[in-house]
Image 1 (tube, rainbow, N blue to C red):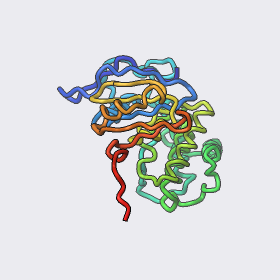
Image 2: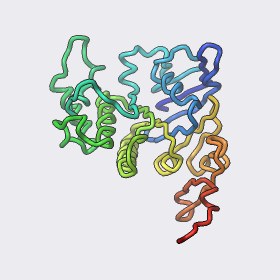
Image 3: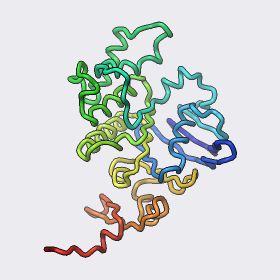
Image 4: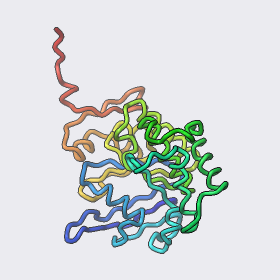
Length: 265
């Protein structure tokens, strides 16, 4: 198992944020994390990444207790992709991806031929090699997100943690990014992504993990988990889940929209 979380609990002072979180993520799969703001998703990510070491319970990466993994090797075990990144300087796309190779270098070393080849392989994996010399700040939001994913691949980790990777993108770029995420899982990467889009979670995930109040309230395949009662529990909105193409696809919409009468002029 690529990632296993057992009995995870974390508190900020006297305020519990995570309570008894259990799940496992295998190689070659996409797990989508659903939950309202404040459910504990970001705290969960920080615990997995080693940024909040004061947790109770156990996190296992590649079969090893995460507490026993040195920080430099942790950077080779798990990579983080933020929602967006705005660097202080306008680096080229290649330079942005090269930053992902820093974990394999010494404190005063510069990227060499091997690191540049790794960066170009990562860009090629995402069909972005032609963008290598473009300015990062002058490409589209969807292209920037693919560059951030390429940087994570260059980090040489097979476990990718994505924090709402399509949150600021238009619909077309959302689909393009998620198609690439799906391709990476088919190549053996394990991907844990947070999303506020239930329909996206259904379409592109192998498993859905639903959180509410710091606890796991549902965990299973999209068909098992993606239901109207769960959407209402998570978001407080009365929803209706419609099945399309013999239940191959499900779409979640607010029930008020389903019952609304359209008045034509």
